[in-house]
Length: 106
Ligand SMILES: [Zn+2]
Image 1 (tube, rainbow, N blue to C red):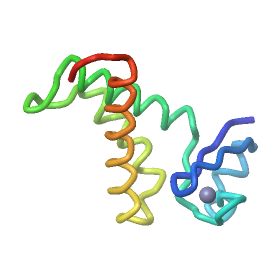
Image 2 (image 1 turned 180 degrees about the horizontal axis):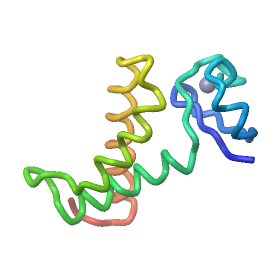
Image 3 (image 1 turned 135 degrees about the vertical axis):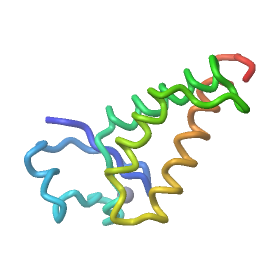
Image 4 (image 1 turned 60 degrees about the vertical axis):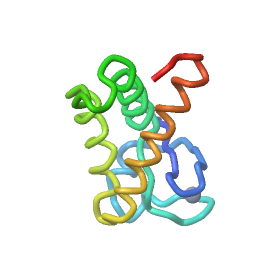
């Protein structure tokens, strides 16, 4: 079992990996959106972006790990390119919030 996350309504649920790989079944049970990702993948990306903002803030280029992990998440939503952009933006905001809640300056 794996935990999945809906990127539209933030609903989280448990499911079997084999079923999730079937594109037609990876729908959110609450809002019906297919903009869903494996939660651990999403959290890993947000953590990596937060690390990158901390140790290599703009205008320095982001750490390669943050770019890589973000792409993993974006690949999951790629059939909908507009969603992918929104998801990238949301991960960036969440990473900033995470840093701010720890009381760290960016
Ligand atoms: Zn949803």
